[in-house]
Image 1: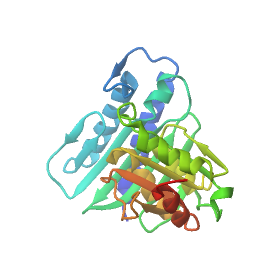
Image 2: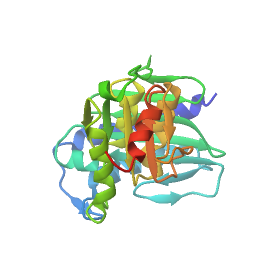
Image 3: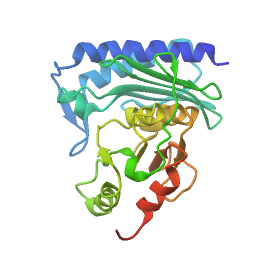
Amino acid sequence: MLKKEIRVASMAARTAGNILKEKFGAVNHVRKKGVIDLVTEADLEAEKAILDIIRHHFPEDHVLSEEAGNQGQSSNRIWLIDPLDGTTNFTHGFPFFAVSIALEIEEQLMLGVVYNPYLEEYFEAVKGSGAFLNRRPIQVSRTNTIEDALLATGFPYNIHEHPEAVLEKFARVIVKAQGIRRPGSAAVDLCYVACGRMDGFWEEGLNPWDTAAGTLILSEAGGLLSTFEGNRYTPYKDSIVAANPELMKALLHILNRKAF
């Protein structure tokens, strides 16, 4: 099932990844979409390569991509594409970034690939078939207490305007967890939870292309997903909590407390 789709997604991700590797450390043009939201020529070239491949093989499908926006005719098949998740990292020469590609069919995420070309780490999943890192199966961790957990988070691009609620949640978690990391790529954060390097992750203010592939990979690796309020998560929600099954309830409890 979806053999052609996963082959094409892999081809697109690796082609875009090669572009990013060539551009890494040699970015010439950086444009600000917001105060701290950047786009480079690497984003645009990688996106064009992905779109060209997807359009060639699936011309009837709809595409939702970070820089190009909505493209193609209305369809029950939607490709969600982030050609460079972690642009700020990329711009500064920090090697934590990835290509993220997912396919949604009839409002169900069916496949996802996340590729960090610098580290040569290729994550993939097809719904119902498990999750893999460089073709080897992966699973979430079995850490069962927040005190023993290494967690990841990120901050929304509008944090300068509304920092209080974001920092309050961060403060509540940091005094409970063994450690917190803020690597700067939601797609990779989710994959790191999926393969057990991290035990949980939370963030708000993300876009569908940021999380679509990573959430499927996480789910197929045995992880759980939720909104901050404990509701069912989809890539179109504003907040995300991801964790292994042992930690989800505790992490949600801490995030939703009103005091320390």
